[in-house]
Amino acid sequence: MMASTGWRIMRDETDSRGALQRQARWPLTAGAVALAALAVPLAVDPALGAYFVARAELLYGGIATLILAGLAAHAPHRRFGPANTVTLSRIVLICLLAALMGTAAPDEDCLWLIAGFATLALALDGVDGWAARRSGLASRFGARFDMEADAFFVLVLSVLAWQWDKVGAWVLLIGAMRYLYVLAGAAWPWLRGPVPDSFARKAVCVIQILVLIACLAPPVPHSLAEVLAAGALALLGWSFGRDVVWLWRQRVPA
Image (cartoon, rainbow, N blue to C red; front, side, top):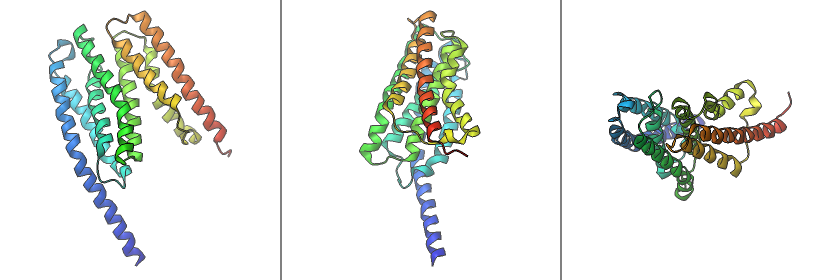
């Protein structure tokens, strides 16, 4: 009897995950179409190269595959939901920006357009959490999806600020900080513990993105961009350092 019950539970979970993955394919497909619609006009700029659209779609395809693989953490919900759709919209914009990595700096008009896309991606960051709570579809998947989108966004912006000579190579530390923190957790397991929710942490994340977008804007000269980025890096170091100290105090001694 217990074996039969366990089998039914496993079957129900598999069916639920399968239904969710099928339902998620619609917004994922729509995202690919939207990305192409945004990328094609930018590809006219000679600085972006003939394969700009393909790079953007390849990046998006890789992320879409990871999204489908991680949907099990969205249980028990059977809908992808409006909040995840908003985050997916941010991913579309971020992939558009990520496809610019490795290209020469575009002309001023294109830079303004890029800054506009980045600003829209940042604005949408304030919508997904509200949508999750409003729809009752908050989940571990949604929280992780949002966090990874933020981390990837910051990484892309820092790479662009460096490669277009707005800030020195040290700006890559801003984009790499979260990934270095994750790597450190592999060596020191106590770093993988949960940290309390913090408005200051969220504010610092927003400030990083705002500063990096400002650095990419045409009117901001190299000297000012370096000062702004240095301040943002110091603030980010403080935020991560505060969490590390808190986790150190909470650790269980061996």
